[in-house]
Length: 278
Length: 323
Image (cartoon, rainbow over all chains, first blue to last red; front, side):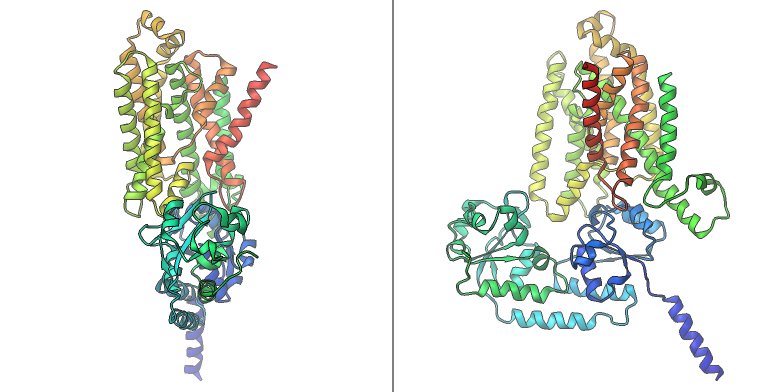
């Protein structure tokens, strides 16, 4: 009896010590998405301006953009845990946050499966969830492996329109990582990151498919206008209507929806005769 | 008289700015937070926020506002041009170039950002001065400044082109300016440094008054132009360089506030300089306070606030004067 009581006390003290955080602030959209995917969205008391998915995330108080967040704004939400992307900053703000005694857990932001796995495990551990996210990661890996088994082998170009001009994605960009996972060959592999697209270069690279985001199409004034842009018009992709338009966050979020994103991307790339002119 | 009123105003504003922010701290709790030892957990948090985040920020706003504005006044007298400000001789763009180079080429920790910005601003100003000195008169210095600004701008453009996504965002935010990173260690240097050099600048009021009459007239009044010019530019560069390095590019304060004070006080630099010093401190404190409290729990970049409020306010003053 006595030993049973002490065991109960021991367990009680354990849970008290490791009381899972209940007021969490997330700095970085990908982390926010993982928190919701692990069904811990109700513990969030604030996030940042890049936290756009799921829609519930946009209803929370926002402490600015995660690369330039407000320390006082975070502290004002009385968090017992801040989950931050390793891109969160400025560095001085991160230092101040820790100095104020706020518990901060930093997780990698990279666009790789390993980084995604670390994000999921990191969030689950920091939140003290019974589910450590292992199942979610295993499912994602399994689905992604299945999807990458049949490479698309299409020569693809990713463009984005953020400021009136088309920007193409080269190596070391999330878009490049997505194309690689889909088995497509990025025609802009010679450049690094997002760079303004040279119309002539785009024509000479002659991509078979063009991948872009919904916001880029909207910024261009619709699909028809997009297809007429210099650098797009005249490419084999535009002639054959092989333009894959995807939601920005789905395509570039590199979160728990990665398999869904890959499936949509591959479906677009592999479609024999997509109806672009609809 | 006005100076005393402005100082009182600054003190009041500093108090309000210290009490307001994302974390609500009651005004009457301020003395207790700073002096008492038996604080509750809640009060301990308030004190940490107050002492580690908010007070250094209020102090940096006062130092930076004063420094940027008093140098703006001196530049307007030196160039005898109402559009002159410290940025004219490459201080801001040189600083920005140094910072951007540090962001794009440097280690990810951004350790080099502040030193690089400081070195960049001093180097650009020194180059400006060297080139501008080759011909007599202020116009060649002005033209050298224009050219240096353009060159710095285009090299920044080049760095922007090779920057990756993360670097791009860092440098955009740096260019908008912010007082958010203020620390006491930083202020321990910036405060005395800015104050001492500003006092040296205040002592030049006779020369600045003489310059208002014209360069030749100033010379006839017994002011040796070239040494004076060098002194003023060195002072301005030494005051503004560290400020730009610490806060990024905060526009408009150094340009508009001197005009506002001149409109109510006239152009006698004996009083104009100290008054603009305090008025600039008020303007930037006010702007930073607004930047912090308007979109709680987020913050606006301060450069946006200064120009968004300063611009229309300035126009209003101007049109009211004419009518």
